[in-house]
Amino acid sequence: MSQLPVYDVVGIGFGPSNLALAIALTESGGSLDGIFLERQPRFGWHRGMLLDDATMQVSFLKDLVTLRNPGSEFTFLRYLHSKGRLIDFINHKNLFPLRVEFHDYLEWAAARVEDQVRYGHEVVAVEPVSGADGIELVEVRARAEGREAVYLARNLVFATGLRPCVPDGVTVTDRIWHNSDLLDRLAGLSDEPRRFVVVGAGQSAAEVAGHLHQRYPSAEVCAVFSRYGYSPADDSSFANRIFDPAAVGEFYDAPQDVKQALVDYHGNTNYSVVDVDLIADLYRRVYREKVLGEQRLRLFNVSRVVEAVETGGFGTGGGKVEVTVESLATGTKSVLDADVVIYATGYQPADPAHLLGGLARYCRQDERGRLRVARDYRVVTAPELRAGVYLQGGTEHTHGITSSLLSNTAVRVADILGSIVDRQPAAVGRP
Image (cartoon, rainbow, N blue to C red; front, side, top):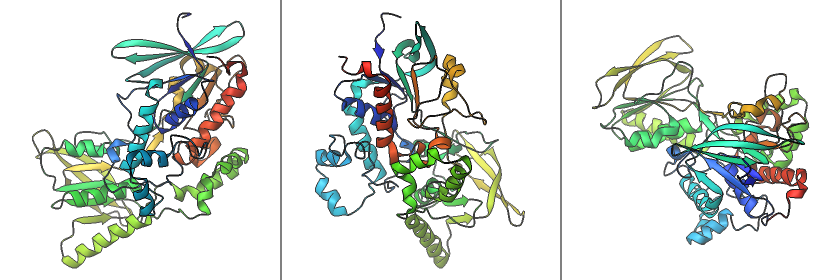
């Protein structure tokens, strides 16, 4: 144990949030050191939904660093300059880059801090290390290429991302997927599909329906959702203030009933909503097909999928899926013989509780069993746990809608890093 190096920060997960933290550490002038453990073999962020024409829903100015350090070498504008596209992007007159371009920016940034990252490392245990003055260190064990690697940390930062969510009773198979696997799964199809069923009413569901409709000109795409139609996202200027850094502090200090009201009022900025331009595009397609008398894009609104059962008969390694769709208005059931069913039914924050291991008994919970989290994103712990445990994600109940969103990533990591420095002044200035 004594032979192991001790890091000021060990980050668990290496998506955009901990990437932004790694950059902040780099720009801190060497006052703190850190290492980040990522189970994927390389950097990747929602690769399954990197559709060619999909755009970001957040301004490029809310990149990894700009709101923390506009002069950083890691801004999206610096990336564009390095790629020779800065003037072209300016002439484009658009705040919202293509998703594939923003992912390339993230990869570009990740490559510049790769010395801080250990890819292919899956964290399997976290345990306290007792000392004379309490628990000042945490032992992190990771599995890498069949061997165990051990790291010691003064502070842990969990950024384990989101997990795909499918309805209860649904089993993911070769013919039933979550949209997070879309592009990889489509590439693996052995035969040309004749009918897709897409379940969901949010941005991803609408993007999937549009993509399939365009990519497979002979296939029918059936979109099933419980609403009457796709609901537009509220991206108006005043509503967007819910994503401002100041709004996080206001939310944190608000009474619980006000917190819930704010989430209810402004859920349509982020949850189960669709860009209005995409809604208009899908409507044009449906109307055009009605005029032409050949409808391939079919909307089953005010409806739900009550059963999806695989049968034989499609491709060499799979079968069909018999999908029962029920109208919520009339109770009428329709059976669709589909080749593929795609659930675009959202994500759930990864619960860090199962990774806390021996630390869990020191972490305080609220009356609903949720981790108590301070304003600086540090988990509230018993006094004897002096090592810091920070969360990037899973804090919506305390910090609001921006808990894990890109909108506040740069500011969030500044809060976390500032907290670490303030709590460990002796660490500053160490080589």
